[in-house]
Image (cartoon, rainbow, N blue to C red):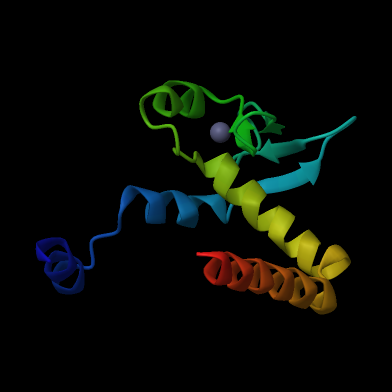
Length: 120
Ligand SMILES: [Zn+2]
């Protein structure tokens, strides 16, 4: 309750929001043979390789920020992860998104849910 009040009053952006803003200036491309490369804002810094962690099924980054903060916060997303998630989402919408498939999946899910309810 108190945090909501603070945000509306002072327009304080959370760390995640600030990272999201910075992620606008990161260019992402597909990497070979898989994964993604994030190019930093300045272009002089190192580029980072991102890949999907097979166990977590989440993006992992090779930058120091992700490696050290990620240890303490398992759901931590560095600015490269934020940028790459947006890149993947745009590609998905352009190339792979199919409303009929989504509908079919949702229908199946609710049927399963109904079955579970009936069985209970
Ligand atoms: Zn990173």
